[in-house]
Image 1 (cartoon, each protein chain N blue to C red):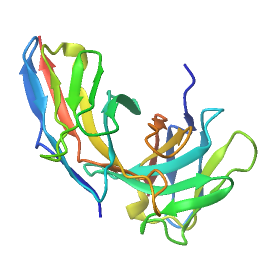
Image 2: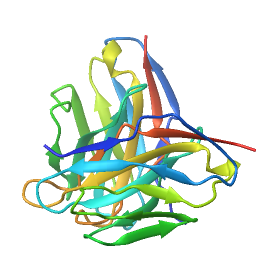
Image 3: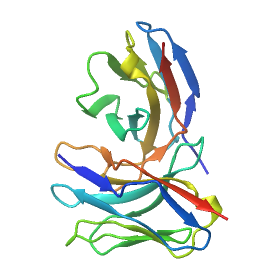
Image 4: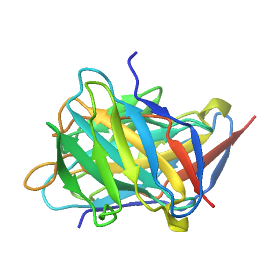
Length: 114
Length: 115
């Protein structure tokens, strides 16, 4: 069964550095998402992406964050000038459509900011 | 905005016990509802879904019925196994208008099943 893959599984970065989290969505899916889960808290929506544009973003997704689909297979989340509070598990997801369509999640990237 | 509330955990059961994890939602309109499961060290896996009122989602012995009148989507299983130990997340999706597939999650319920 096709799956969403995320790399790396764990990223350790110094505060203030830039980090790029990578995802390969399921190949015939059209909608892509990033979520994050701070330890002990809820899974929170960050952004949805369709047709090379952001469709929706949360208040968490400020100018520090950006997303990109640099080629036909990858979907990336960039965090500029990381802060301690960016430490979390980041999940990528994809779906064929957005209405009633279940989203398929990757295993996540654990981001640790030192 | 939309929100999802799950029962407080953790839940600890013996094998073959009956499981209920409560989930209620608030939303404008009629969201689709999902249960996701996260096994240790893994990502979120879709367990079951329901897209309209009175729909029953089912998978691997788990069931949940979309109850519009009580805005609930409780997860049940008649006889749990040790392998069901995981974190369970209830989620709603209210696509339409300005929303493009944003899932709203509950806080997750840790289930531990002992032999």
